[in-house]
Length: 171
Image (cartoon, rainbow, N blue to C red; front, side, top):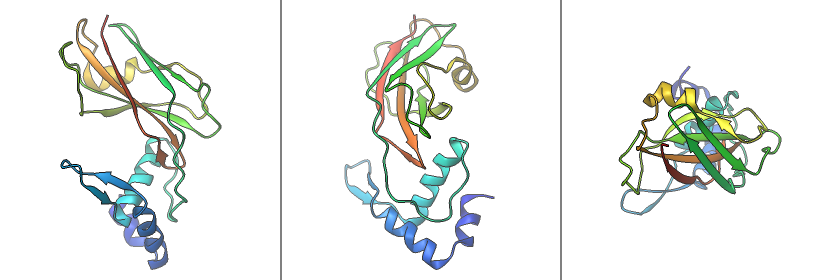
């Protein structure tokens, strides 16, 4: 069942809870203007993260509790490996790592905004995360000399930390 169908099944009280949670989410549009999420957007955000992590959908809005951001991230990318080392390691109980990556870019590119989720770690996983198969399934085998941007976030209970973004030229 999709988010729209699930949203319709919620009670008025549950929708009000999601609206209150949405008011706590601040997002910025392309002009840099702050916008709150609607209750439906908050419901979709939390539950899409839960599903990506392999967890179940929640009907009641959780309390806002962003996990601590990842302290460091070091990708090691070749044509035969795609490792993402991170700290703190292992992750706290119940937390996962969400790794998003960009398509391959020219080595001279210094900014990226096109990130796609490629891998989610097991709960409380230790560093490093092997993302080669996931990257290849999404973008193909990394090509020597291309730059790949990597964004890493901590996940807990439907929420994601601020991303830590870096890049590496494929060796």
